[in-house]
Image 1 (tube, rainbow, N blue to C red):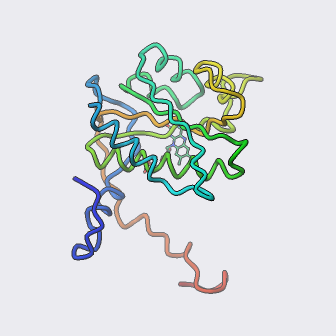
Image 2 (cartoon, helix red, strand yellow; image 1 turned 30 degrees about the vertical axis):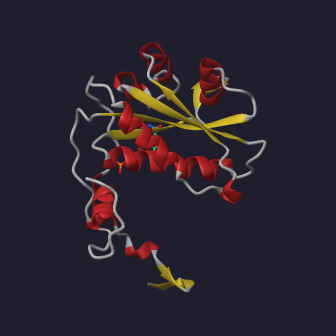
Image 3 (cartoon, rainbow, N blue to C red; image 1 turned 180 degrees about the vertical axis):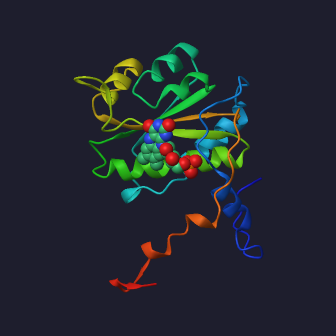
Length: 188
Ligand SMILES: Cc1cc2nc3c(=O)[nH]c(=O)nc-3n(C[C@H](O)[C@H](O)[C@H](O)COP(=O)(O)O)c2cc1C
């Protein structure tokens, strides 16, 4: 499966990626090939960003001890423990006032590219989450990976070969009542 913007097929391959990508939290032991990892990072760097500021930092973590620690960053991060790698998405807030948006777009590019390359992933929210009482998940991750003060950690994307299967999304995702026409009060 590969990304395509083939007008003849009206981007069908791209929509296959969108439909079939699911959050996977159990991974095979097998490592991710360097070539695939570089393609995933290329996808991240292809992200649009406000004023083209490109203020991101992507920290590729594949050290098993660090992955174990990241899995403890907050509730809902445990799946990182069995992932062969995780990409921490951080953005320099000193040069990017909309760092959340810019980081989120890059994280989603990572997820879609990983899936298009036969891998799976899940997003671990770090911003606004708690590690333990009085310590934010962001503080925990920043200290663990020695991330400078000016960088804000948005999320971690765990990546690997899937060890669980999930069915693709179907047309039931379409909630037409959430689409309006011209005025909020008008149905589409
Ligand atoms: C902003 C955001 C935060 C998320 N945080 C977590 C998380 O901390 N842990 C987790 O296991 N999944 C997390 N997810 C994954 C969602 O639970 C998942 O995308 C959603 O349930 C839809 O399922 P799907 O990805 O299989 O389509 C997050 C997703 C987003 C977009």
